[in-house]
Amino acid sequence: EAGVVQSPRYKIIEKKQPVAFWCNPISGHNTLYWYRQNLGQGPELLIRYENEEAVDDSQLPKDRFSAERLKGVDSTLKIQPAELGDSAVYLCASSWTSGAYNEQFFGPGTRLTVL
Amino acid sequence: TQLLEQSPQFLSIQEGENLTVYCNSSSVFSSLQWYRQEPGEGPVLLVTVVTGGEVKKLKRLTFQFGDARKDSSLHITAAQPGDTGLYLCAGENLPDSNYQLIWGAGTKLIIKP
Image (cartoon, rainbow over all chains, first blue to last red; front, side, top):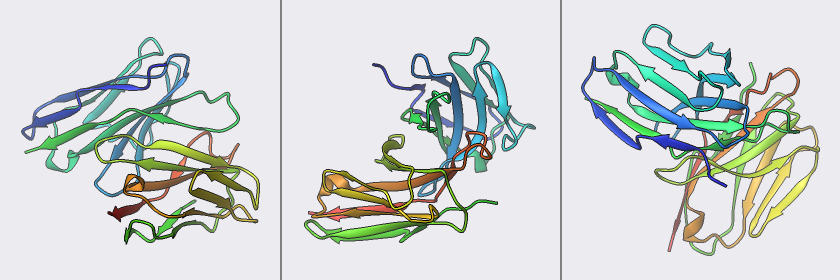
């Protein structure tokens, strides 16, 4: 079974440029998460989708970040314009929240460097 | 606000030694998960504990959930270089948590050959 797929793996951009990350979750998983992780820290939730609906976007900086999951499968996270402080690893995870526990499966992440 | 504190933040030991890392909170969790993250990869789920006092073993790794379901520990016996990574704990408290995990900041573990 294929795991969570993310692309690109690495991205280097200059500040004020736009950037987009793509995620394809595990087949059949209804819930998709975008996290940001700084070096040596735990993941911080940016947004959570259940199917097509964003059910928790309270931590998403909406002035520059946007996300979509149009058909309830794959998802895109965008930053426009990027700032130096956005440098981090952006992780996508998926889960089946009808299961007993919220066990999440992560992709390898996209390492973003903003110069 | 529910918080999970992990200790130590960083641990570097020699191959063959034993170690324990901790995940503590003042809040009760209905379940708690441990993940390991290797450099350049996403976290990988190791175990979920759900019952107070529960002990689960995964080869040389022993996970325990506190009796009051507020804390957990991970003990590694005879550590090997392959155990190197960032160990993260994450808890949830259904139904209040609305399926959101509360994450610790992690323990960075280095096992030297």
